[in-house]
Length: 188
Ligand SMILES: [Zn+2]
Image 1 (cartoon, rainbow, N blue to C red):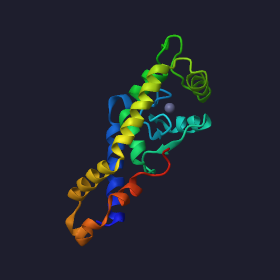
Image 2: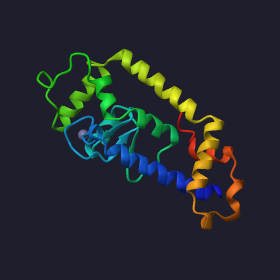
Image 3: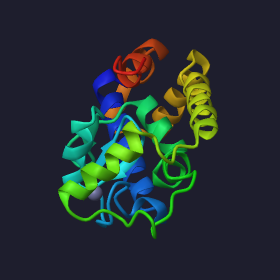
Image 4: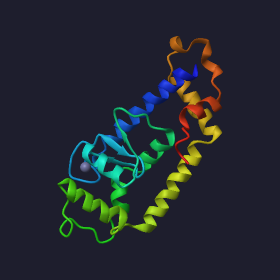
């Protein structure tokens, strides 16, 4: 299998995974406001957000990717699989947060205010959970992106591949090639 076919197949698998995660009940609403059907991923927090909030979280320094137009790296997807809006609520909207004292924000100004309290003042942050979740994500990424795991993924992709497209190139991709295709340098 040539590296370009492998890369394409990997991208298809990644796109499918993001769509599957988006279908989970906890990810059907924007993490930062009540708007339904998020179209973006906040890669910094591994949350799903709406179009408006994708711009507003950029203002607070978070990195955002469009679900339909972006390619996601393996580590970003691993973090998203372990994360999402459910666990993010337990981390960021935990200690003392309630919708009576702090109604869900509607206007851009209200969302900005909510983000300021949530991300800068860390008013409701469950610090212990934030730390333990971050460690779990890092462990998972280390476990998934070792050479032996990459070999496993490679064989799984070959078995999913169409032999007509693949031909004799099957065995020419090395684990290092797969590693390069999916372990994008954006993660550190
Ligand atoms: Zn939103």
